[in-house]
Amino acid sequence: GPRPQPPHNPWQREERERQQEARRAANRARRDATIAQLLALGAARTPVQNQQLRALQLERDFERRATQHDQEEGTNTELVDEEDDGPESLEPPQSPQPAPPPPKSILKTNRADLTNGYTPTDNP
Image 1 (cartoon, rainbow, N blue to C red):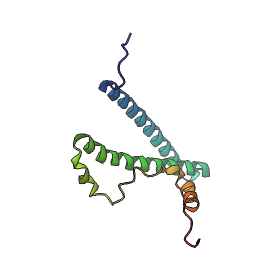
Image 2: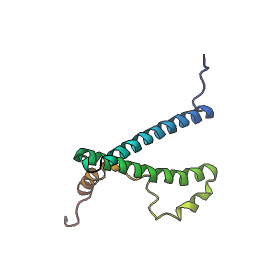
Image 3: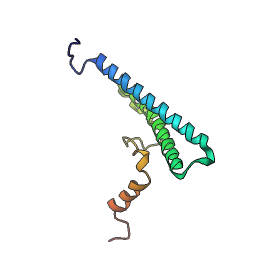
Image 4: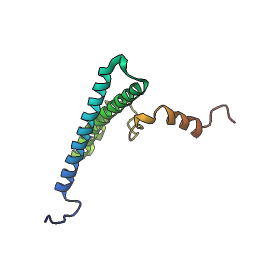
């Protein structure tokens, strides 16, 4: 049978990453197909379907931004560490944030956080 290999084996990691990427690609394809189906319904969409479509599109846009960010960041940091300040100058100066919150919760939770976490200015 297959010999047990140490987990830090680079081939194994590469294979794992390839599988993850394949899964992500499959999920993306499934999501895009769902978006296409919902769009094709046009005016026949139910409110629930409209909501689902909006959520899927948000998720897709978010992922697209995230992957672009990954490509700009990841490739450079792996090869050369000093090149860090190169791509950042192109972006608006909000790059210290690790990642924006996932799109689904944007409407509800963030607003709640703002009102709960920070006291409004009119409080002493």
